[in-house]
Length: 272
Image 1 (cartoon, rainbow, N blue to C red):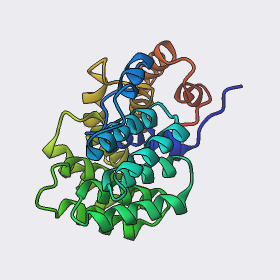
Image 2: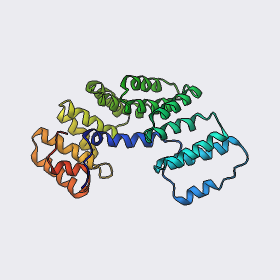
Image 3: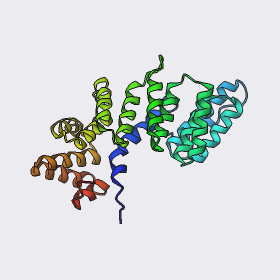
Image 4: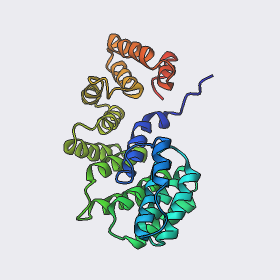
């Protein structure tokens, strides 16, 4: 029997995926085919330590993207053997440990990476998201703000999105709406921001505005998902538009019949 994930897991899954991929930006863009891994592994182990460390870091990010955490840690270890104080490798180690549920080791890695590169907004962002996941919301807020204050930081939109979700998880709905709205203004094509903004607006009772944002997602087949269709169905139900609710439910059943959202719809669990 398929297990239905909790309401919190359902609500924020799309964002978590976006944050994970964004956190790895610059290290890897896609999971590697096995042939690709072998090709990189064939690189000589002699020569410039910086180059060796860079190759191992790239491999570590690729393995992390595939969920092969132990192998990723081994590659990070080899990167650090070549270049012991490499903040990028230590920061990635923090992400891997966080994904493994090793909170203490993750925090230690993030703090060490920031000691070595105190102006690295990307590491600050990743550390902030880790703190948010740990329920340490005030500390997360401070780290997000610190990241976005760095003059060379170029991922403000990503940090605003994550900060807005963190504020929502803390029940600070008005602040979450403001933060996500700002992120959306800077990048209106981002479906993850639109989804989470619509979710916050639904929670605040701003139903027409919530409908506007989720419609923009579902209007594009390559962006709509089980989550966005389920959110649209919940919004339409709250608005009293039963026909529209049922239409989204049919799409959900037809396109994503095995999804937890389809099961929630079938069981009428709209308020979770």
